[in-house]
Image (cartoon, rainbow, N blue to C red; front, side, top):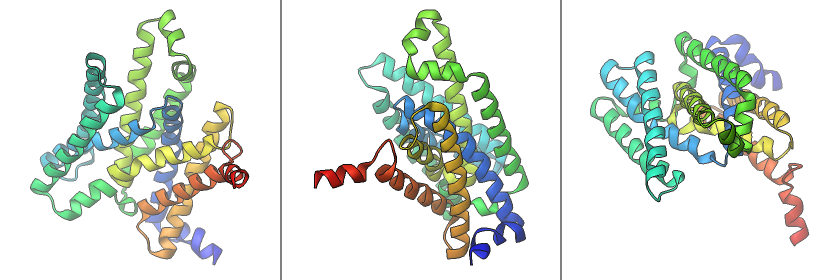
Length: 286
């Protein structure tokens, strides 16, 4: 039973192996970005940007159909544009950055759905919103793997800068006025390109779940940043494998199954994590 559920599908079927490889690559790269979003107290920014890319994806779809290149370029441009405009509005008006992002991403989501509906069917819309991980082809797998590799290289080269910006951005501004803006721009670009890669696999609505849930769960167990990053990546990979296995055995949609598995890990960590211990707090309260 265990062999049939958790190992046999990936040995016998090529589409399951491709789905697993893509999910593993995506989990390792996106969870690291999720940890830094968590440290910056910008956890919902990933959700906002995952919706913000939809109009660009929709324009690429209208122009070229289900073209990976067209939808990737469109999604990247739309995500960067929304991030820059929302940041500019927050600096020029009394609105905070979260309120500015909320206004733009809700409009972007509605615009994207409307654009897709002009030409596509309900099946195409569901594909863009929720992904089709079991139908991932070789081109999409190579694209996701390239994005994951680029993200890991950038994180390794700019690790100290990202850590300094997350914990003490004022110190960076004192030493260099342009460096914080440069680091923030690179981080936003990595975030958007990973969300664009994630939509190819899990759709715009599910991609952020793989990014944030393992990161939050890791924060409940570990104290130091390197351990949190490692634990988040391992947790994301484990949830991808377990979610795909359960979707195969229980005939569930693969993307939601992966995110539900990550949600279960989050709840377990919330109640029993060494840095959370909510269950023990509730027991002491009652």
